Length: 267
Image 1 (cartoon, rainbow, N blue to C red):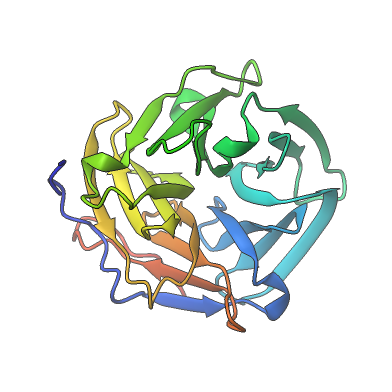
Image 2 (tube, rainbow, N blue to C red):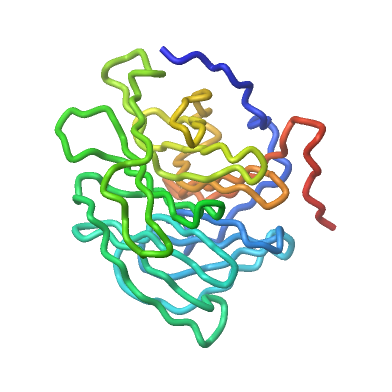
């Protein structure tokens, strides 16, 4: 077992901000912070389409729809958006000038099997790549989950995973599994945070060298179906949950408990 060597730096019991999205966005599946530090981009399961959510006005803007099918996550890099589509033929959609009328996209197929079920996506700016987290495995009864790199220069996915997560390292019950649904890199520490919804709801933290720094279970009453995770440029943690049983989708924001972190400023 890997011990929880790192204290979780966010107080998940006390969000500093909480939002309920309109009913039509109950299937929010992935989020990414915009550089202005006051907005999020998000996708839903229903289509390859980008939405933005203003954290001050709480206004949702919808942009062009590029394709049908399930969008599982989104990563924003300046005016370029990358969308992760799952299904029989998983793919990355690169959308340039996503927030203007002049946006255009290109699709890049991923060398992943349907059973691997890629669900998490984030931008690793320091290494000019995307990281893709798989919720499943191509092997039956396999408890490991892989994270792959997608090179933004060659626009190709590396064949070997950059990280393999073995849930036996932090889950004692052999029936339990950790199934990544979202992934994000902390803007200050460069640590990789991975959230899982199906199976055991929890967050794990890894160094990019593959070292597991900790694993923490989530309160299932607070996080009904946590599928999106992101960090604001100023360091705040944001988690989104799909709406279930008539409930609206939620977005919760948490401040870092370390005094050295500067809080986000809202009016």
